[in-house]
Length: 293
Ligand code: NAD
Image (cartoon, rainbow, N blue to C red; front, top):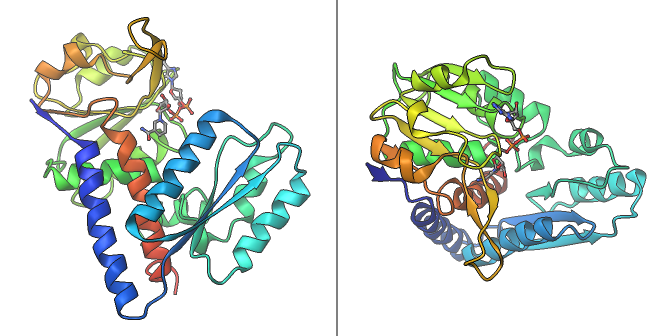
């Protein structure tokens, strides 16, 4: 069994980005600039955004945080989005989700200029992904693709089972794993809450990608000997021995599954750290106009 060290890989990729940024700066190029819109005071969202801003600073990007009260109207938020679309210095931006219930997330997503959609959630970018065109891949799937690539995991002819069909993880992941690419080329089964006998579907997998949000859902009896296991889940379980009263676990029962696997991602320290790295890579692409001229 080999551990896929997402934390270490993310650090390496950030160092590579930092070198590129310093080269851009030393040759008089424009410093990549990422903005983030944070609405309300959801503590988890604040932590995520803070990490993104800190990561930007660490690699030498410019970053701008736009904070708005939870009482902002949809019209006002659409104006904030329009302002960022028109700000020539900002290469890309994200709108941290979830938004307050009175705001239509789809309407906001559709208003983002696809050229600046470094989260890769706009239908234009998801459509480009589906067609195999250059695009901003959604952050978590992009992180997983990077892991498969850098660890040299063979995908051609393999059977990949994705558990979960969310728009941000399961669905794009199922598409990417079936593309004719080095990190695709699998036969893919996508499973979800309505799948009959999910355990036997997962048992057929050479590569399992679990993204459901249920602690330790994928157990050892569901995993084939030698499978590659990518655990996207981040779940809190009570743990009185920890100061904060809980610890984070994935969707995979790591202790039981790890000995059967050929490669496995830990939680924490696996897929999670790669997500921010993907955002930085997309912002670099945006500043170099690699996707849209
Ligand atoms: P989601 O809640 O949007 O979707 C969950 C999916 O799981 C749904 O498609 C649903 O059909 C499926 N599902 C639910 N119960 C199931 C069951 N009993 N059997 C089979 N399928 C079932 O979730 P999401 O946004 O994709 O997130 C999934 C998990 O990944 C969460 O723990 C989340 O915190 C985590 N996550 C981690 C990262 C990261 O960077 N590591 C990024 C995004 C999400």
